[in-house]
Amino acid sequence: MIINFLASVPLSICNLTSLRHLVLARNNLMGEIPQYIGNMSGHLWNLDMQHNYLEGRIPQSLANCTDLLFLNLGDNRLKDKFPTLLGTLRSLVVLRLRLNNNLNGEIPSTVCSLENPRILDLSRNNLKGAIPQCLGNMLCVEVLDMQHNNLSGTFKSTFSIGNCYLTSFNLYGNKLEGRILGSLANCQRLEVVDLGDNLLNDTSPMWLGTLPVLQVLSFRSNKFHGPIRTSRFIKNLFPKLQIKYLASNAFTRELPVNLFQNLEAMKRVNQTLNESSNTGDGYYQDSVILITKGLKVEVVSILSLYTAVDFSSNRFKENIPGNMGNLIALRVLNLSHNELQGQFPPSLENLPLVESLDLSSNHLEGEIPEQLTSLTFLQFLNLSHNQLHGCIPTGPQFATFENNSYIANDRLHGFPV
Image (cartoon, rainbow, N blue to C red; front, side, top):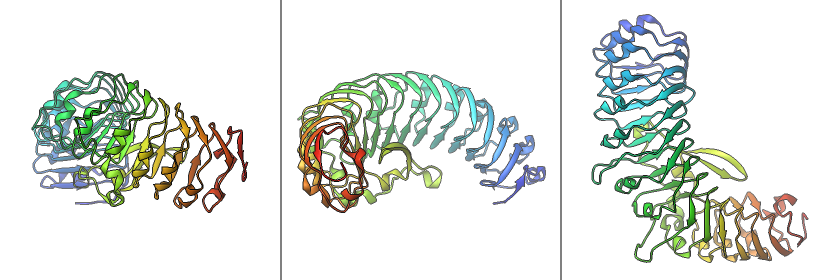
């Protein structure tokens, strides 16, 4: 039953004790969720009140709805401690409390009482404290999204090999510490791992490259350090990866040539048309924070739209590997704010779809290759703060770039400098 209402939830709805599906999403509902919602305990399977203006607490009477499979209260204005009553709804398959709510306090271990959860979306609240260790024992979970909270400490769950069904693991924007959870290597179905904007302190986790269907890997704004080490004994690292985002850490030494010899999905243009399989039958859609065209944006439907490499704001040295030009599906390439040196790599002319190219604040030398004018999709270019010289190429796209694309290259000349 799908109803469009204004104002508050009519109490008379709660008399419909045989109702199985109640969808009140995307209305202008205000006030509190009525306590009488528990009267619908007999047959209610789906309760969807997302995208409204509902306030107050999640009613305790909801615990009576023990047959509830789908509960979506996301994008409201709910406030309270994380409701322990949810542990009594053991049949829940989808739980979404995300976005614009203000649930606070710690996540109780009672949430692990759910027997067959597929999607746990608690993102964009004000939850704090440690993540319950028992979450690793919830064998059916496919999506675990707790991004944009205040969770802290180390995540100590253990995902067992052969019993991990995770496809999306998103803890972006918390205060998590320590090292990467090693048992993620047992989650062979993982497509998205986003641990960006935390306090993680570890070396480069190249072992994640063995995950066969991983498409998004983001560790931006953490405390990762040391060189990126690849092994000649491990072949075909990151075969499906489309977004690799390691910006704003403390990685050092050279960009390994071996790494870019892999990344097979970035070498085939048709891969950018693939859809993610972890959308949960329409109940969930992945997103990731990216810096593209000089702007910070949240990209949704990421696996069908973007192919990106961002290693900016680290301490990488030496030359840019020439084989980066083999990644012909790239749309975003950002190597800015490092200590890269040597000649401007002419192989970048082989990136026909690149839209955003940022190599600024390095020690690059030489001329800007004339062949770059063939990059007809290029909308953003930043080569500033290098040691480039010679004449700026002229061409269709280069005519659109202003002086700030080239500043602090004292020996560059031509339009628009």
